Length: 147
Image (cartoon, rainbow, N blue to C red):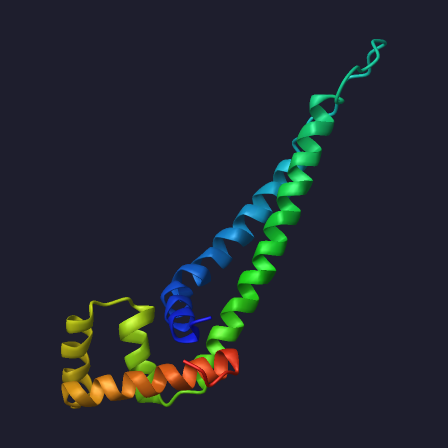
């Protein structure tokens, strides 16, 4: 596994995964509200043949979707916590540089120019810090020094 590439990709997805947490919570709440509006089947003397009735089907679909979303929410919440722990292992300058290059997903040249203005570092120094920060992040995130 290329841990450096995995770390870069995870950092690029960080903002989207954070946003998905809120959306997933909203979808779960929406399904929980919808379960109360699912109408029960009327009692009929005609026996049900086949897969049941619409009430049962809609109820089971709702329950299944809520369970899937709850599991997805837990997985993404764990991902966010791991990413944030990895970022906490970095210095302030390293976090700022990693943030510009990967989290904000700025083009390399735009990120370098912005960081040169903000930090006063030269171009080469920014790239050295980025490399060191990515190594430290990868070590904190995956526990492996291999890149």
